[in-house]
Picture 1 (cartoon, rainbow, N blue to C red):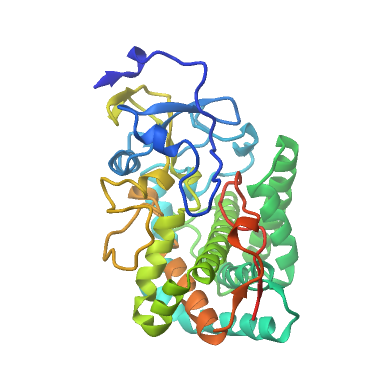
Picture 2: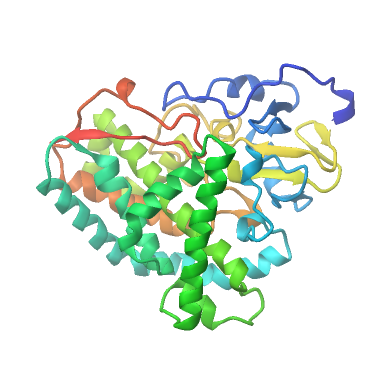
Length: 405
């Protein structure tokens, strides 16, 4: 084991995030980081240095260790840009809490995101998916599958769940893009303030007149252990909306692209629909579109990946690399429908494992299986090489996916 102090500082730390030059391969530099004898550091856009964990077991160990904190306000937390640190008037909600506060707060909302809840929502998800496939088929050709299907389906669902009027969808599409992909601190601060202002009004309205949705039910339960107050509920509404829209939208787009590009996979799933759950799990592993949520800061000296990480140092769990670790997954760069119950770290691990994972798996399965069952002639307008990807954004995905049928 090496102590962090014994590892000479380099002036040429690789920059993070690293660009994916192909949607089917690891970002440039991930293999080099993983093949080092011990973990190395990367330089973030904020100028900060952070340890980069790329091996499956290292990432899992870090995420499962409560000596690492998720508190974005900690001075050593590896934020991408300084404007991502919430202003004092805003709460960090679940994603920025540590146990025991996180445990109570998560328990308060977990009942709406159980496997049973996901099964109960399936008929409504099917209705939403069918509605937007009807619109797609009635619309012009070619069409942008991202704009016509991948974006609105999860947005409508999460808006219904948390009680946001779907009439505000255009606002949320615009502002979520600004917040998640701001290129300047000013744009990030402005977008965050605009969205949080809306959420503040939404929660205030529900406090006056509670509604039967996730946020409205929490308002009614105010005062129970872990149930958020007004400030924390605003932050929770923001977190649920962003995670419940951006992540599934990107995965629906990438999944559709891959299946349109791989007729062998598409045929296997059409011939045997029982394989769709396995396909969804593999899509989650293969693309692993979000890993920034797996950043932590050490609260004590901790040994991970052959080095002792000092208290106050930041670590990023590079789950894109961990989910392609050959020590964990056989032939990891191959998309396979036959991996069995070999779960990846796409939803994280430990106390902060994704709250909405059951809902998202069901949503992806219904959206993709219905799309290819109802539009068997769907095909790409352009080859994958000509598509534009969100290569350096917080969540990986497609800007557009032109299709016809």
